[in-house]
Amino acid sequence: MSYKRNIQWLNDRQINYRQDPINDEPTFSNDHYSYYEDGTHEYYRLFYTPSKITTYKSLKWHFLVLYYLNQERAMIHVLRFIAKKENGFVTFFISDKVLDSMIQDVINIGGEPPINRKRKIIFKDYNGLSFEQKMKIVGQLSGRQKLDKNSIYETMIDLNHWSKHITNGRLAGLLNCSVRTIQRHMCADLKQEKQRLNEEIQYS
Image 1 (cartoon, rainbow, N blue to C red):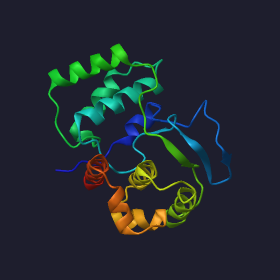
Image 2: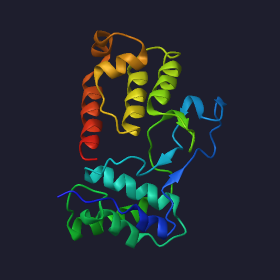
Image 3: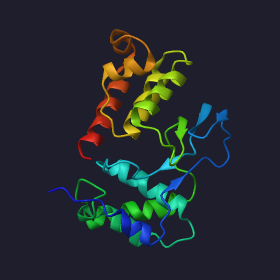
Image 4: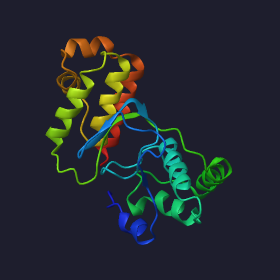
């Protein structure tokens, strides 16, 4: 059974689950987006898309981000709420024992910025752009980079960010190359990450 995500519960309690970069300065910025040539790890957007949390590892990372963004708040009841399948954030049931251990780990090591995916393009809230327009911008900016595993991975992250299924054809279109070129660069790690990201979309 699929449960609808109860994001309103977090909003009613003013739980912070997003943060724009606070130290990194964009290479350039306009009304629609900011571009970081070297990328930034400081962009956090939890629950931005309908994709749900599908693994223990991902759940713990979400816990660490929430703990980091709400350091002055009592967060244990919030983490327990997120972990309850009926509240619509996760796709699996987790035992009380495992959850207690995970929360204790978060409390012990939390507070510092968690490891995050590097982002080069951050679209601003209420930018008014359609998905197609955003992807055109992603393609234009990605085209400035040398085609390599990093540029493919970053484009995969952008597609996942908007809950779009990742295909070699879609990557080739955005990166202005052939599908065969994408296939040549698609190493085992990228294939595994592509599968994992697409599985996230599957449960949205």
